[in-house]
Amino acid sequence: MSEVLLERPEDGVAVLRINRPEARNALNMAVRTQLADHFRALAADAGVRAVVIAGSEDCFAAGADLGEMADAGAIEMMQRNTHLLWQAIADCPVPVIAAVNGYALGGGCELAMHADMIVAGEGARFGQPEIRVGIMPGAGGTQRLTRAVGKFKAMRMVLTGEPVPAREADAMGLVSEVVPDADVLPRAIELARKVARMPPLAVRQIKEVLLAGQDAPLSAALLLERKAFQLLFASRDQKEGMHAFLEKRKPSYEGR
Image (cartoon, rainbow, N blue to C red; front, top):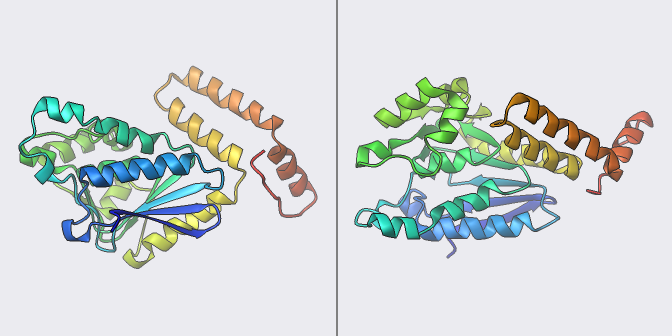
């Protein structure tokens, strides 16, 4: 059975589920490779307008599979090129929504942080416990985390390895919203549905500019924003959206 399942619950929305319940959805190389393959395929599919990534009802992903790493050497780890597998997720041009139930630890927390929105269940817990096994985060757990929650919160998480509960993660700015555990996946799909109904070109430009601009000087980021804003006036969707508003009717977006 595949370790990552692809579902198409409705038009424009794809759901990827990690399917290793016996290992608490630990991210072995098979899972990482399948995730990357799926994201590359979805990125090339014009019919996909939003992607949801989920684990099981009681665990999103409890970190890397230590059995594949415990005896590995530095050169072997380098030659695995796992950064290229992670990059396939980061490069996804459409919005990605993480639906997090239970534990999102180590690589699982880093996977969630690759998303553009995180919907967390009330029982979810986020953490970077790598220090407890003699290493450190290696897929964004020091960099994306710091950008999300700031230096002092990030330092506490990565230096102690202690996880934080969903409500605290929300207060820190690590998640988009917290919902009852049973509502996590339905809410994530609802958000994906809303995004999928928006004009696709505008959605992609918003994601691209927001991500590119966050590490640029403000003047450069504003320039990116302004040029993308102007570019959208060449699209049919801009004309359709504004005329539909003026004519008090529902717009029909084509991604052109």
